[in-house]
Length: 278
Ligand SMILES: [Zn+2]
Ligand SMILES: [Zn+2]
View 1 (cartoon, protein in one colour):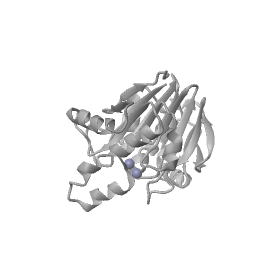
View 2 (cartoon, rainbow, N blue to C red; view 1 turned 90 degrees about the horizontal axis):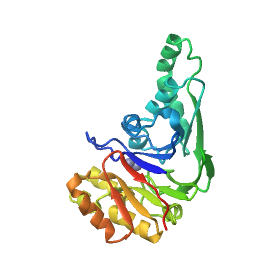
View 3 (tube, rainbow, N blue to C red; view 1 turned 180 degrees about the horizontal axis):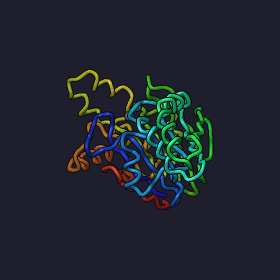
View 4 (cartoon, rainbow, N blue to C red; view 1 turned 45 degrees about the horizontal axis):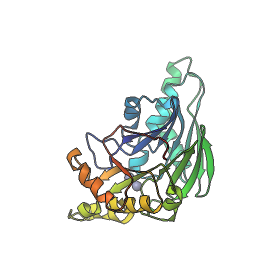
């Protein structure tokens, strides 16, 4: 299984970082998208993935940076389909209403294309599933459990523990450390966590920017969560402030003070190839 960091950015526009989105390549045509930030379809194309390959889309919470390109995923999945094909979208309570509004916004486009293409006789088919912490479901050939995360006031927020064969990946989304994140991380091969550098953020004299300290994991928080739960690899994404590549070693060193496993930080399209641990 491969994890591809499609977008490692945040709400702050960055020409080199798409918005938060992670792709799990379980098989050649069995892909799972986790969040759909700015530019995720472009990054999927670069990663050799198209919406038709998606077994499911897992949404962690409804902050705009994590869902802004769901409409592109829905439209492109539909336009590229050769026969009626459902797109499965999972998320916290509220995702169904979000999709309803998105479909309303797409209604003119859907009408134009169905009027224009004689063979396109169906509207987008979306299967939306609202989840609660404790739920379990199957996506493709993987089994997924749902865990409560803490990202107030963006609630409910959830994270996912995806298991396929011997592989376990924990995808936490935006959250501070909490019991739910610990549950999802136990013995995971990889733990993907959105992070901020609280030491740098608090130096910036801007209250709105400082507010993000309340509800995100710092690099140290993520490293401590990784260590406490014996994960194999800690994967940092959604970095704020976005580091330049020459600063990556400093970020990794900060995490390494608390976690002695592998620490991965990277650019968009960084690929983590999971191999079984001893
Ligand atoms: Zn958020
Ligand atoms: Zn975010």
